[in-house]
Amino acid sequence: MTELNASQRASTLWIMLLTIASTVTTLVFACATPFPALAALTALHMRRMDGVALAVAAWVVSQAVGFGLLGYPRDPGTMLLGVAIGVAAIVGALAAHEAAARLKAPFVARLAAAYLAAFAAFKLVILAVTLVQGDPCTAFTAEVLSRQLVRNAAILAGLLALYRGLVAIGVPAARPRVATA
Image (cartoon, rainbow, N blue to C red; front, side):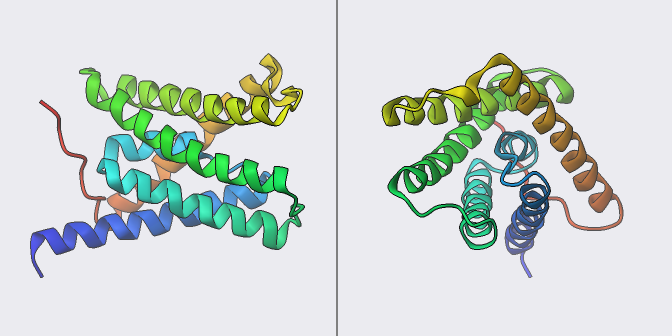
């Protein structure tokens, strides 16, 4: 097996493992898939396209859980919001990778920057769609946003601990992100 194949397999494994972990949080928090947390983690440990692949995989599973298990309504507004969440997850992943790549700082600072960029990008996409839909944007109060910011940060800490713990016991690390010049 070539090193590239091993690296690709490791990234695929991590996409699957983190999709499963995000599914657990989706079930625990009733559709609060931690897209910004996933984006920040991948921004420091995976390639950009692997981060996008994880965002898409986590989104597909979250939609399956929402519509299949949690009984989301199948009306046009809910369907549009579901698509918007997918777009927001991808935009958040790209924003996290960009922030991490641009900042020349210690790991913790880059992780925080990636997380904040992902959170802001994700929320801005959702806000734009809710405004187009004419929703009152009650999910964008300071109280709700701060609760989501803290909850996702806690999930990020847990996912980082999971990642490092599994790597420490021998699970191969994800394919590293490509350094930018």
